[in-house]
Image (cartoon, rainbow, N blue to C red; front, side, top):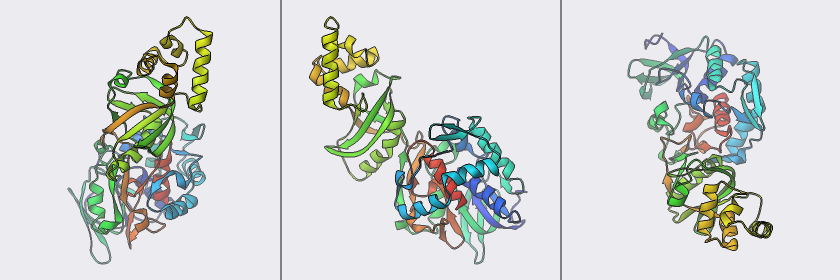
Length: 394
């Protein structure tokens, strides 16, 4: 079936990841007679979907709003997310793809909590859609009333092209940024925002914190450039031997990358290790513990809140002074030196500007861009997959 020049397709979708799978299945669902081709460079569909959420695949989030995302055009984003909403996504997964859903607070998963169930559901829905694996696209070009797509193995022709090849994050899955080279033959350079790693771990300077690798603590964190606050998130922070990770860290990482690109310097991260409490509250609490347990060392008192290892670092940083220690707990400081880069990033920040696309993701007549290739990215928790589903439907 993957021999080229054997037919002209109505739609050729470049990329068999989240947005490409949704686009193909939705087209086939809406117009079964439509001739749809999916070209995937890997030897299997949904490579990146399979590793999403540590293999559990957090499909979407019932609390999503358009303001949660970083993009160049929130107006178009709102229009797309309103039309192809979380409710519509869940309905499609259940009633069309046959996937039963499971819930954990606001997070939505396949009931199996296995990402393979999601990919399998799409495969069932693609019965009647041509799928060609191991097809790396080299060039695409307009041939007047149709488009030609040339791969390393074949040449295909289609009335419409959908670029759904991901961004630059997790290049081992095939999302290595090559898709932008193809898209930019149709877009203007000013329609492209520099791509940066997002939802990625951060590297830090402080050696005492590196020794806490594996320690986890609930925190409210804020990213600063000098005295200016850049972004704040709450959640679990994890110490590592290179810096910090955890959901809250991943969520601020894109803002860090953006700040560096803008030339901001002296970027630090401060973590309130007793979230919900201010500095005065923490000081009062510590003084109360000192009064109650006069025979205990400061490390031993702190062990009522944290692990021994973290308590030792806090006590050392604060020279065993209660007031200083309260300040450290309220603002445990990390000096950021960089990220672990695209190889470890979950999503890409930047890409083809959403403002250059119509509300159905059309760049020029017959050329569409969806998913991670578009300048839309959100925090952890199903936001980025929801964008992939919504843009695929659009």
